[in-house]
Structure formats: C-alpha cells, structure tokens
Length: 74
Image 1 (tube, rainbow, N blue to C red):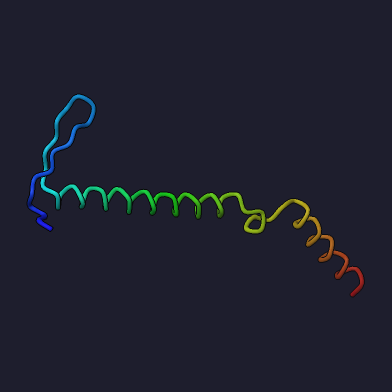
Image 2 (cartoon, rainbow, N blue to C red; image 1 turned 30 degrees about the horizontal axis):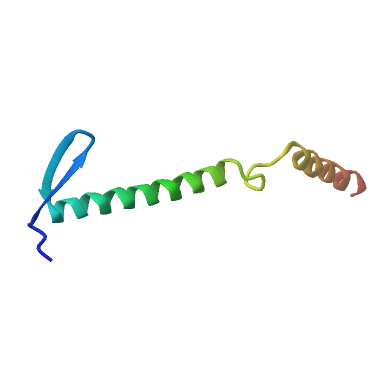
C-alpha cells in the first residue's frame, strides 16, 4: 500500500486531493476523539447524576436522627 499516493475525492462541490497516509491519519484522529468524547461524556454524566454519590435529604435526616437517638440512650 502506497501511503504517499494522492487520493482524489469530492465533498459537496469541492474537489479534494491529499496523500492516503494523511487521510487515514485524519480519520483515525477523528475516531479516537469521538470515542474519548463519548467515554468522558458518559463518565461525567454518570458521576453528575448518580444518586449514590451525593447525599440526599433523607439520608442526612436519618443519620442525624440516629446520632441524636444514640446520645439520648447513652
């Protein structure tokens, strides 16, 4: 495979021509960035909206009630 061979293609009404190696590199970089963006977006959303990562009002009230109940009995 000759990576220096020019590849001609058309996008819209414009004609493009670039070496095959450059075209493959652009496609690879675009795919890597899309995969990383999807992964980072998923992990951010999972951490942002996860119910177990942030304390809820009910859990705070329950812990406070247990604390005061333990102090009254002791």
